Amino acid sequence: MITYKKACSVELEIVLKMRRECCACVFGKDESAFDGEFMRISREYFANSDQTTVLAFDGERAEAASKAVGCATMCYITLMPTEEHPTGKRAHVMNVYTNPNYRRQGIGRKMMEMLIDEAKERGVTHISLDATPDGAKLYKSLGFKYSNENMEIIL
Image (tube, rainbow, N blue to C red; front, side, top):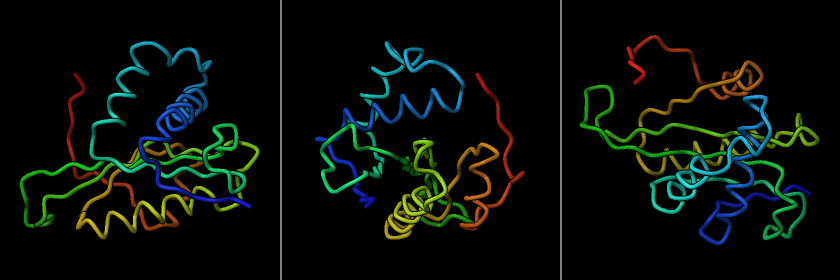
């Protein structure tokens, strides 16, 4: 049975383990590529920033890191309000990941639904994300659309 939990400080090491696993999978690298400074900054972010991470576990013993099979994070930001976003509250989804042995069981969908519901409760008017080709199918089914509304510079 898959169980879901919004992570709190007690699960920080599980969140970091899942982030390392997610990044290794997405970027095709060994998990050790995401040690050092990358994980130090990630640890600081999860400990101190406005975010919600949902964890999925195989079984009811959610405290067991070895049972973690999925994760998804919503990062919250507040900007000046605009006509389209009168609350100024926005969010960005990151690290939606399900262990390959558990895919196609609705785990990613359930984690995303939990995050979207919380965002609505918090008055968020805009959620963005970056999608892999496989993930894009899930996000489209949840109502996400590709957008050309922004310009950006990468420094």
